[in-house]
Amino acid sequence: MSKKHSTRYIFVTGGVVSSLGKGIASASLGTLLQSRGLKVTILKCDPYINVDPGTLSPFQHGEVYVTDDGSETDLDLGHYERFLNISMSQKNNTTTGQIYYEVITRERKGDYLGKTVQVIPHITDEIKRRIRDVSKNEPQYDVVITEIGGTVGDIESLPFLEAIRQFRLDVGKENVLNVHLTLIPFIKASGELKTKPTQHSVMRLREIGIQPDILLCRTEQELPNEMKSKIALFCNVPSESVIPAKDVESIYEVPLTLHEEKLDNQVVEKLNLDENPPKLKEWKKFVEKFKNPKHIINIAICGKYIDLHDSYKSIIESFVHAGVENDAKVELKWIASEDLEKEGAKAFLADVSGLLIPGGFGERGIEGKINAVHYARTHKIPFFGICLGLQCAVIEFSRNVCQLTDANSMEFDPETKDPVIDLMEEQKRVKSKGGTMRLGASACQLRKNSHSHRIYGKELIMERHRHRYEVNNNYIEILERHGMIMSGINPDLDLVEMIEIPDHPFFVASQFHPELKSRVLNVHPLFRDFVKAALKFKSS
Image 1 (spheres, one colour):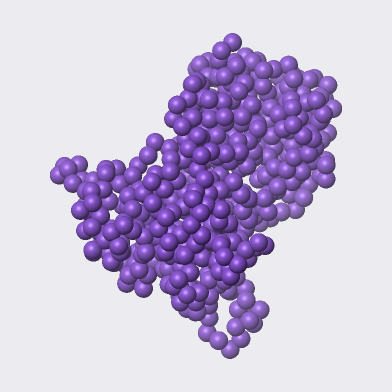
Image 2 (cartoon, rainbow, N blue to C red):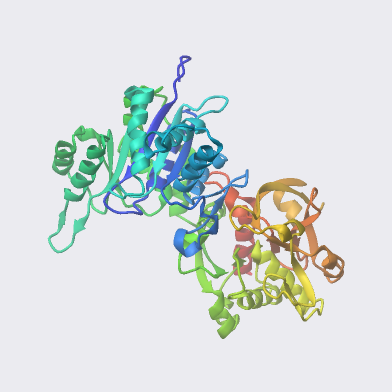
């Protein structure tokens, strides 16, 4: 950007159907602009009335993504962080619930005294304030991309659309770009692509007062030039601004395919940004290695929410990153913990090279997870536990090695004689459910010469948390006496953050969520070394 600085704003909307991939499109565009040397951030606006997704079931909303500052956010922030290799904050996700909560709180305090509080201007002003707020940084962002959740035509997203209509007037049309992601369906019976849904979607946008500058057209088929011209004519955009977004094998190909379609060229031209050539060498190398792995391994994920894989989105992507780092394709075997509870671990784990137990809440399926840990420990299968996975590992070890047969978590059995997992002291006073867990990044001191220390290559790390229960410090002595090492301790709270068993190919668990910090071009070391151990186990 030139010395005379002005932040540019890109708004990404979606039409026709939900789940078209606005988050991936936004992250991909951000990656392309970042590769040109621009400083980019992204804001996700969610139209639901929940203040945040923290109290939503994973089956409703998929994974809850947690930022360093402890905000529970939409899973799209995971895409933003993974693609752009930056850390975001509460400023990068806002919801209808947050907007109304803020406005109503101000009204109760008397900030609007004498005025009728309305959607316009009070709600839309608060939305615009948050869009501006996310751009305030030193040095200032060159580009702020704002993804509007939902589908054009939904009642819920109308205040956000009205706000971005006004925003163009507030900051000048030369500083704003509207990108609309839509669908060109292929009708198999007639063998035709259809543009009418896109025409109607754009018509709805224009009724609100928003004219798209660029159309991203999701399609399974090639988009012929004559069809692009037809869309351009009826949607009032230049033909070159109708950009196909064809289905690809991996989400990590999307930035490259959109670059081939000259999306980033159009954006920098329309917003008068510096036209530095993009540096995509490392990204291309990553995609090439992803598509041409030298090895294939099976790793099991034993969880409670496997019917919706988005519940574990960051874990899935972390395995992609770790697989590429190890020249391997990681094929995930999804195991419902309740099924394993009924049929036994051997039926599910005899053919895998590694086992991961992810986070979760509640008693359902817990014994299945504990049985899975026991099988992995006794059969020397590489094991990696995350959050609840660590707690299951401690319970299993306490029961079967320390001979504390009644060992359990207070979450699952409040009457247990040996609560090896207990509710954190400060959590015992908590009544409200929303935003009250231990959330966000905190320090972990690694034990010298431990496996965890060797993996990280340093003694002090910062990782993100989302939980209420912890290892009960009263049981550390008996656990360590029987061979389990507390390899990571929070130096401020004196809480166990990592455990491991030395006499095992790979038996490591963390109370924190390392998957939240794995990046496309910066894989998390725990996933990297877990996959490496699984490859070694397979070849042994």
